[in-house]
Image (cartoon, rainbow, N blue to C red):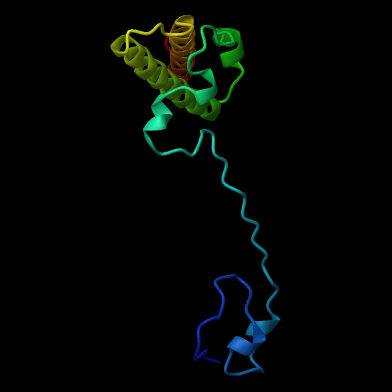
Length: 146
């Protein structure tokens, strides 16, 4: 039996009242429920120039409490997807710190905690080394060459 109207909703359930012929078997099909996962944002959803500057609460501070750089041992246990995300977080942080450093030089101010930039660069270097190790291991596995 032909349907004269399309299914009313975008969902995957066929509804009885959307069919012209109520005695068709379409409405007897089992309902399929689709679960949509919430999109995860890994970075701040700002899309303006303030992304290139530190939080306002840190402005004018002489010292800012920061963490340490990522070690290779910690990065080796991360998945490729996590490493990819972390690379872009570090890249964004490096760009922000370099913008802040430039702005401080232009205003003849002291850039607070310049070692933050060194820690980000060290983390990026360690992450790149781990990715190179994985690529070498994958190549050796595929070709059998050492």
